[in-house]
Image (cartoon, rainbow, N blue to C red):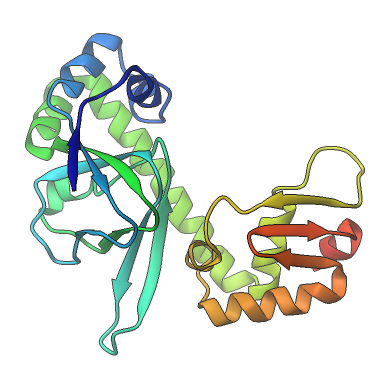
Length: 226
């Protein structure tokens, strides 16, 4: 792990994020004064489930996967956070990590003292409102994932994800590059890696071709029928 200095690009990432973007610049400056930036290599562990945590984390680049470990040692992904997203903010009040966090790829992470943020939220309505909106958004994401898990099969989840990358218009064929490894996509969709592979195999009959991280769709209408 290496400590970094904040750049103008980093500041832009903060200002355009869901949480910081709704705060006055003076408030953002006050929070960023104490930001600590660090690099993490792929597979580095930021913290483990149950750890005592005194920081809130923010992704400036890269990907962070949040996961829980069952009694049998199996891992279940809870969320994947990318550039501009804040996580572990619930530890401001819980004090301990509810899941483990790992860098899914090389990442730059900013950390903020949770006690200071808690004090700001108590004293400044703007900060309190920003946290409320942020947590409501996170709650909706959790509900969406729960509904997806219960309503859609593995193949339908993958098809839905692919269609979300379909360009506007009536084109029946298109392709795109996955922004992360397929193992991260599996976790993001709540699937085991082998379930993702089976889903791609099923979708091949509907014209979906996977070449590394490139996904080619040759029959959009067939995919929409899933």
